[in-house]
Image 1 (cartoon, helix red, strand yellow):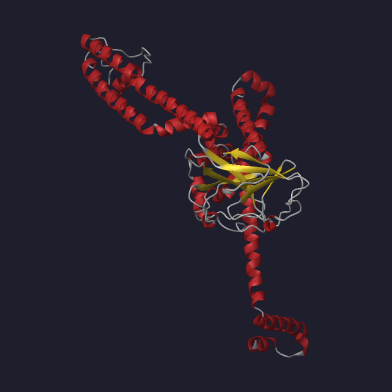
Image 2 (image 1 turned 30 degrees about the horizontal axis):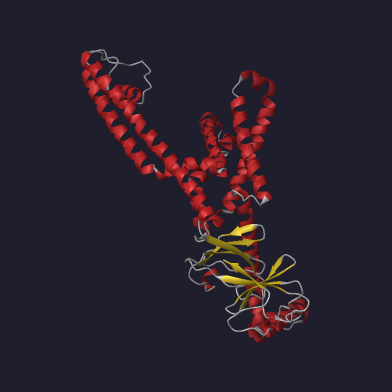
Amino acid sequence: MSAIKRAVGHSPGRKLVDKNAALLLNYDKRAEGRPELEGAGVRRDMADKNRLYSHKKRLSEIIEVGSSTDFISRLYDVINSLAIVVNLTVSIVYTFEELRSRYGGWLVGVEAATVAFFAVDYCLRLWTAQCLHPKLPPLRGTLKYVFSFSGLVDLLSFLPYYLPIFFPSGTVAFRMFRVMRIFRLFRINAYYDSLNVITQVIASKRQQLMSSVFIILVLMLASSLCMYSLEHEAQPEVFSNAFSGIWWSVSTLLTVGYGDIYPITTLGKLFGIGIAFLGVGMVAIPTGIISAGFVDQYSRIKRISEYGHEADVHFIKVNLSGRDRWSEQTVKNLGLPAGIIVAAIQRGEQIVVPRGDVKLLPGDTLVLGAESVGGDRPIDLKEVVLRQQNPWNGQRVRDLDISRQTIIVMVKRRGKALIPNGDLVLKEGDRIILYTQGHIRADHTIEI
């Protein structure tokens, strides 16, 4: 503070500076006695960052594959799919000279609009990439998207269209890269579970497929060298080098048979017959692997579906309020007994995966799952309907004269199930479900 006084001075010509310095000194004195003023700016910065991240997360939910309950996200998915199909359709139609001469300007405009949409989509995905990988630092999460297959396809779907503006000499080369837009069709694949089965089958059988491809490559290389040795002297202009043999082995092993190159010697023909038979078997290997993968995948889906209907597991919904003990607690700190899990958390229109570090908020709906009680001995519950003369009418649950061996499980009032806490007042017409080892007048036994 003394340094500020010396810097300001006391000359009459510096009144404005003196006034600002006095205000600065006065704020400094207030802040010395009130630490909350010092941290107010930090808290504002944190609030702004949290608000920005929440906007990013919501935008990421919109541009990624959305749930059926999120209308905006599903609408964006439809627009994205239509843009991909329209862009590819325009690219194909533009190759027809008659259509190009008649609708060329319109086709170019549609292509420009869809490519601009791809560019905006890429920028949005780049900005929200850290939300896809929240456990990674923001820069690493962004780089992971940039160098992923989908990130490269998204980039190449619009970049070659704009590069000729900056590099006119490479127009022909950049036009070839526009073919990469066709890979955006894999985006549509992500929107439909039935199409995802193909990806899952190939991923699950990738080791077997790679082994079969390796066997085919070895057989292809060996047969090409053998055929080159057998046919080079007889037709040197056809089998001029080893690559000619490779071309023959590819067309024979893969059962294509173009007919542009074939053996003419007796040994070459006999060897070609053997390779043709092997080719049928080699093509059948990856086909059989993929077919078996489809059978396994659909069998697994069917088993899961049957298990979901037949498994002896029960689920209930619990709505949290601000007064509940679980409110503001993380899932791992709930202290649930063994055999009970939090299957899902419904928060507004969203379904939250109940990881251990997820904090429960007031208004959340928890879906709890538990295995049913096994054994042959049933549990008998009693149902009592309160009539006008019943002494429980108008009584609170905690004031009822019942034994310690009796537990009120549920109260049904006008078709609605009520949780029997101590302050609940019983009324005429209530159906009381309770467990007891004693005898209660006018009860009905319910076996569960």
